[in-house]
Image 1 (cartoon, one colour):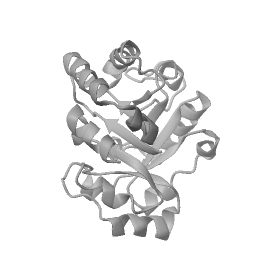
Image 2: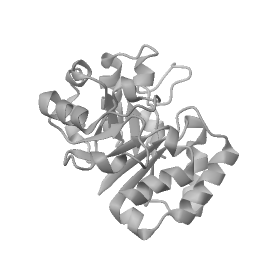
Image 3: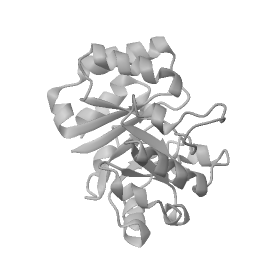
Length: 224
């Protein structure tokens, strides 16, 4: 089984979410569900909308929801934060430490606290890293306690650029320092996913731009 993560980032309106789910449900075959574990990461605003739509389509427990972030605080006076205990009621995964969050100043002390918060509240972390130093900074011992934690390798040169990493890049990362199973994210689309599957350690993909179009996203799912 391969993991397929749709990271919508700061995109989509409620109407667009509804339209997306309509197409997604119409194209989602039993074979797709057998081959792939599909995880969708909307903005915080749209998590409940997505949950309700998946319920309506009979897809609860077949497609899964991730938040795009989680607070490093348990609860309290932290305006604008959304805590793991709150998210645990509606999501199964949380993206943690995405490069776009790190570009805004998030550091690995915060990231490791977020991993702890997620795991302690029953949320599987999807932990992102872009290089050896970042991978070495992921020190939370709680990752191993999560039944379905994931590492997402996202090289900065590939994020949103249309210049995906090569198979050789991934092999180098795996052999030189990661030595883990991972999902890959960075300009992923239908044309390149099969190349990466020659690497036994690549367990799936994080899809950004291509996930906004449900037809494109399902083309990737049906290619795997």
